[in-house]
Image 1 (cartoon, rainbow, N blue to C red):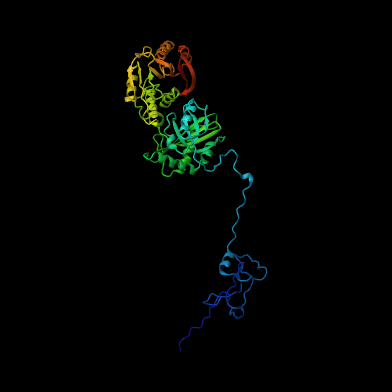
Image 2: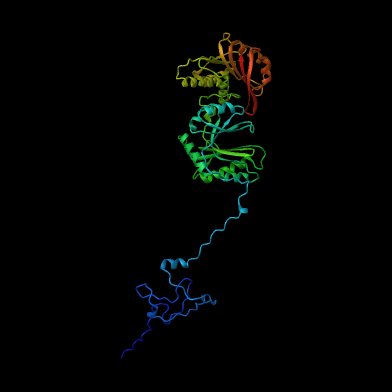
Length: 469
C-alpha cells in the first residue's frame, strides 16, 4: 500500500477565519464584517462561517496598541470608506498682519492702459508738448530740472505711431515700471522684481509692431540717475537686466545694437523704466550724413523753426548755416505745411551760406536740393535790403568752438546785416551761448519778443525770438 500524504488543513476564506491572526481595525472600518467569496457583498453576520474576531488590535512595532473606544461604526459605502481613511488636509494658516511686505518695497500695481514717456532737450518741453497734443496725445505730466540732458514728458495716446512722427522729441518709450524709488542698498533688486511681466510683454508687442524689420534676440539695459542714492547706476542696470533675462527665454544681452532696449530713469524719488520704441533716426534723422563738431541737433533746429512761426511762401535765410541742419528742418517744415494745405500754398525761397568751406560741403550733403547754399561772409551779405521774411541761425560761440577773437564785434556786424535784409515785421530766431553779447549787439530796430533757455549738451544756451520793427 502506497504511502498517502495527509490531508492539509483547509485554508480560511478570509483573515477572520479559524487560525488567522487578528488584524488591527482602522478607524472608520467595520472590524467584523466578512464578504462572500466571489461576490464582494457583505455577508449576513448570522450566517457567517467565520468566528468572532478579537477586538484588541495587533501591536505595532512592538508597542502595545490601545483598543478602540466604543463599538465599531456602521459600514460606509466604498467611496466614502476610502475617503475616511485619508488623512485630513491641513488648512493654511492665515498670514499675520506683521508679515505684510514693508511699505518701502514696490508693489505690483494693476495693469492699466499703456502710458508712454518722451525725452526732450531741457527747455523745449512746451514746444514738444504742443506737438504731441497735435497728434491726439494727452499730456499727463512733465518731469524736468533733474538732468542736464533730458526732460521727461508723460503722455497717453491711441496712436503711438503718429506720436513717433514728431520732430522735436529725441526718444519715446512705453512704460513697464513706474513707482517711488525704494530707499536702501537693495533698492535696485526690489524695484526690478516688481516689474510686471504683462507690461513687458505688451510693450514688446508694440515694439515689434512698430519695427517689424528689427530681427534678433538681443537686449540691453540703460540706466540714468539723478539725485543722491545708496546705489550706483551700474546696479540699476544689472538688476533690471537680471529681471529681463528671467522673462525673455533664449535672449542674450549685448551692449550695442541690441534688438530691444530697456531704459531705467531714477529721478530723485521716482523711478521709471520703459521699452524704447523709437530709433536714433527720430532725433538724428536720416538725411544727416555729414557731421562736424558742435553741429546742431535736428530736434533743436526744428524747435527754432517752430519759434519762427514760418508760413508758406516765406523767404528763409540762415547766414551762418554750418552743416545746414536749420535749413533742412525749415524745408521739411514748409513741405509739411503745404501737405496739410493740399499742396496749393506758394513755396518761398530757402537759402543760406557760410564762410567755412568744410562746413559748407557738409551742408550741401545734408541739405541736397531742399535749399540753396553759397559761400559768403555773414557780415557782408550779397542780398537786397528787406528781401527776407525769416532769419534763423546759430552763430558761433566760444564754448563750442575755439575761442573766437572779437566775438562781440562779430555779433554786432552780423546782427546789423540781418536787420538790413529783414523786411519790416520779419522774424528772427537766434540761438547762442553768449546771450549778453548778443543782446548788446542787437540794433534798436530788433525787438526781443521772447527768450527760451535750453540746455544743449549740458551747456546753457538761449534762443532769442526777435521781431524787426
